[in-house]
Amino acid sequence: MKTEAIILTKKGKSSGTFERKEWEIPSINSKQVLVESEAFGLNYADVMASQGLYREAPPMPCVVGYEVVGKVVKVGAEVDVSLLGKRVLSFCRFGGYAKHVVSEEFAIVIIDDIPAIDALSLCTQGVTAYYMAHYLSPVRKGERVLVHAAAGGVGTLLIQMCKNKGAEVFAKIGSAKKEDIVKSLGADYVIDYNKSDYEQQIAGILGQNRLDVSFNPIAGDTFKKDFNLLGSAGRLFLFGGAQMSSGKWGVFSMLNFILKMGRPLPIGYMMRSKSVLGVNMLKIADNKPQVLANCLKEVFDLYRAGKIKPQSGGVYSVAKFDDAFSTLASGKSTGKIGVKWED
Image (cartoon, rainbow, N blue to C red; front, side, top):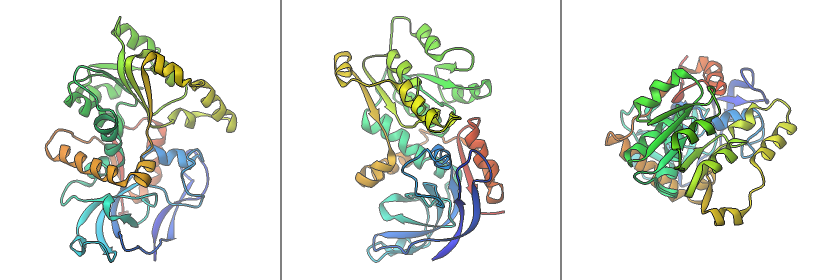
């Protein structure tokens, strides 16, 4: 069927890379649902895709986006018909920037009157945070935890999840205006990397101690710094490569990004008893769908129990999409950015 979508048509770093026009979407199969979107969320992976740096993205022109809030308007033959008309949050494998989205039944959750921006926050970013902090290698009481991009969508939820577990949180930010946000969420130490080298700041606070966990969506030269800060049994979660998007010289920037991370030697990880954990939720959705479904449910349980509070970075009308996307790409945003299908 045909619908309306915000379509990525060419590579670029700001406005002008997307066009709003008609888009053809596939028919649903027996285990899928069709959702009429009310609003969709933006994620940094979308920025990487717009720059041609995300190899999982479909070839251009394409519709990116991982999550929508909307109403179920059609269900497959094997799907419970009681879902029709329900307001849901839906994960999708790209296609989220469209007015109608095809989703797997396991990737939706009924949200009733939950604010759209809260629900969108709990999807890609909330599930990523939960998968790392609760499922893959749970954070434990008393552990010292570094959260990069701490004022962002994943970071603000990680701070809360780690504090709920009794951890000591080092929140890394890039501007003073974000300090109050991370402190209000419980961060024990605020590290502004624009003031001085963050590795030295953290080492000065730690003294003879070491970090237990780092949640790192930056990679590049931060990988070595984080690895040095970790102690025995330390875990470094890598769930993004944001530093790569700051390059200006195409393939040479990418090579420089890779070289900065060094050449990992598994024997060294064993001898020092440290772990590097790669996280790509798209792969989890493809190959471990029940894990994703369980994490999504658990995140909403935490939200409904009042244990986590999503942070909004703004809700834009679709007519202001370029402004929303540019804000996210600038690295100056906080919390979750959403876009509503209204002019």
